Amino acid sequence: MRPGGFYAGRESVIAETLVGSCVAVCLYNYKEHFGAMNHFLRARPQDMADADIGQYGVLSTRHLIEAVMRLDPELTHYRASIFGGAAVLRTPNADNRIGVANVEAALEILGSARIRVVHQEVGGTRGRRIRFNTESGEIECRFAGDIRGPRRDQ
Image (cartoon, rainbow, N blue to C red; front, side):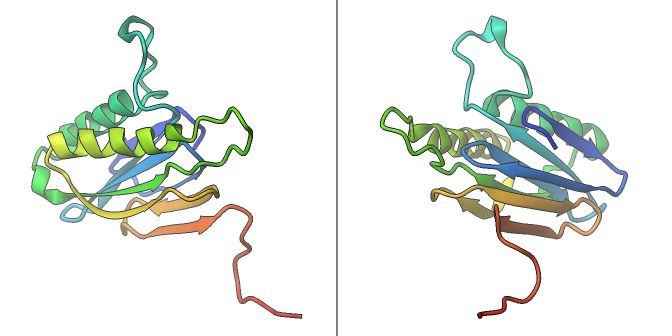
């Protein structure tokens, strides 16, 4: 999934993305076994008239919740996981608050919707690869650049 993207549906898919300071929210309906995922870049728009739903956490996460509510309106059936929000830029002028603000935006919207957050892998200085099975709810998260499989020390 590219930055600004989202998926919500009953169809079983493997949703994958790579986040750094961006954040991905995974919503899973554990009663009916389907899910949703977004990937946003910034917490909130400076000007709501110029707002792109996919780009901003408060809009993207709200949109994701609205999409799953059309499929099953029972809030207690959902669990959320949040990934990303790292401080990946290492320059003197880097704004390391972007990732923190993104995580806060996701938590704010999920909290206001009363959706329980069951897992967070956020912060740090490395990007993360996320792989979400929307049917089983299984989420694989690993740091970007890590290789799957057994590690062999030489």
